[in-house]
Image (cartoon, rainbow, N blue to C red; front, side, top):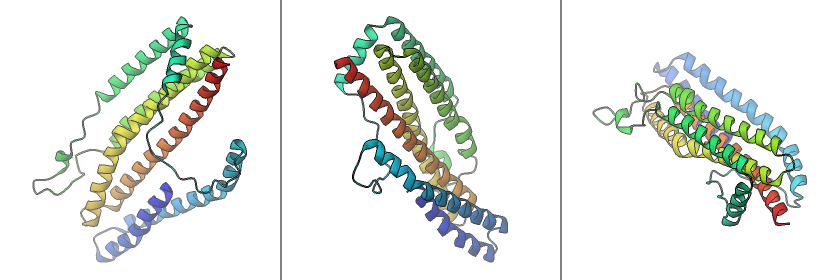
Length: 265
């Protein structure tokens, strides 16, 4: 679905760029980049469609479903929070294992320090700074897409990867200790939720604003196709990352449900 959206952008962009080349308002290089981007996307779509039947069959066998899963559609809704019963059982497990409780607090403190140091270097997104005196939107000098990708997204991903690595280490140490396993799965859940919040609540809205401005400039022949395509691709990349996080979150929730069933038994 997300690739189809990007394909729609590029499919409209290619003939438009060709027309601008013919009128002398765009370069041949822009037209070649547009066609190359569309061809790369076509190749990616072919690969994913070829892999889809086997993936759906594997999923269907795992969940023992009789109905076809072809109707599955991605969702960017918020992550499901822990229920009160789950939180109570986790607190009991934490109270029964002081060492794990201390380790979790140390991890949370380290994560908070990382996020604080990262985001104090990221300027606030000012929509007003992207408008000229006559109200015409401008991307130049306002908010750099490479800066956004290189600093904010990568920093958020690095932080979340570090937290997930710590959670995986806790999983290995836990072994068959149910209390330790509960703490490890909770750490994994929190790591995914932290990354999801950064991407969904901070980065994606900003990228969508930039995408809208880039589209408006390109439509008015005031900006390049490259700016428009890059902004659209960046927003879709973040949406794909959010879908991956939802899958990871669901997996951790399933593990947690199994462990909570063990404690009740």
